[in-house]
Image 1: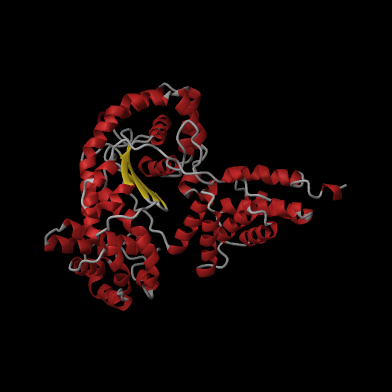
Image 2: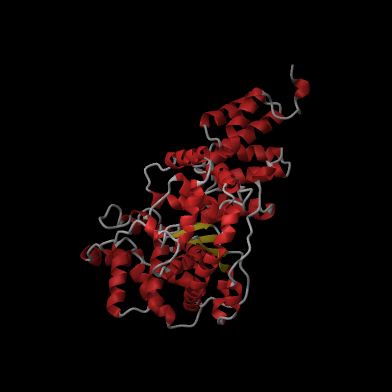
Length: 515
């Protein structure tokens, strides 16, 4: 048995409109990493915003629209009423209580997971998509209709001068932030990186909106028209881009870290996202402390910022702020210093700090964003096991079987012996190599994994059933097809595949044994 060839596809590629690479070659030797950053426009996002505006998305008054958004909304009015009705039905049916602001990021996540129009195909296997994007896959066919029926490319070409103007306006500020950040982190010149950060300007998105999405080594920042400085948000995303992997690979060095998290669980004024995952809390603590050090505020303002972040649940901001002061006094690169810095975190000391200071700090009043400025959600910080799974998935998509196998096997040997996603990936690799015995074992173990994503589990049942059919074990094959059917998950038309397997055995290997 071989893995479904339709499950493996390459990542999209697009041209860069603004020469960020050229800018990077003119700055100091500390700015090597900026070569992996570019500012661009994106037709997938533009088409998505046309479709959303037709579907009812709106968080601004008409008087606040950028001229591009006005044109987009006019185009939306020209679409066939039947298509508009279907767009609105889909949009409303998938809101699930969220307002338009919170809903936008999900569609951005979907857009950057697709190839360029007119195909709008998935750039990776469906079961590898972020959950928020997978839930919206039914929108893709509607996007294709909007693109063709609305002649989106024509409007896109007309609007390009406005995009060029906005990107040229933002470019110097973005470059300055990256150069300053690289200098602070002492990122060495030379070497190469497969990691990228793309900053997309989308003028039909709400003004001053900033949406940040990440997918392992690919980071995306989507900006609406900027009427006030959003450079701090961009720098925050860039620091995540530079530091997330470093944080993920060193967080395990903190002994008794769960005890630290329990200190703030359920405490008033603490953001819930900082109480459930240590890597997220540690990463945000480091990045907020670095931002304060880069900005060089007065001592009074620096203490106020540290206290506010600390009281919100970032329990390592004071530690990292002090450690960064020491870091600045020596000459080594941050990447070299950080492992030792993390090893110096003492949970007993931090617990004592908490007991003596935390509750004496007043809860900071969080400002409420106006309707046209959606609140940015912090980019999730990865953990080592998840990083390995993503690495394996990316290698599998790129047909690099050796690298994928090494990543999945490391998950099983170093982190979780029964990890369903790793077992599923190894099953795909074994089936691709024609080793049905190994594939059968891996898929069977994957079906027993309680934490496996339903999108993978349903196909683990189907692939296992097909192998059993080829091994002439029809009754066991039927049991697995029926398990897939009972799950109800329809990723890549799984239900049709399960029903077909129930109707007739897969393959012809046992045809001579059947009545």
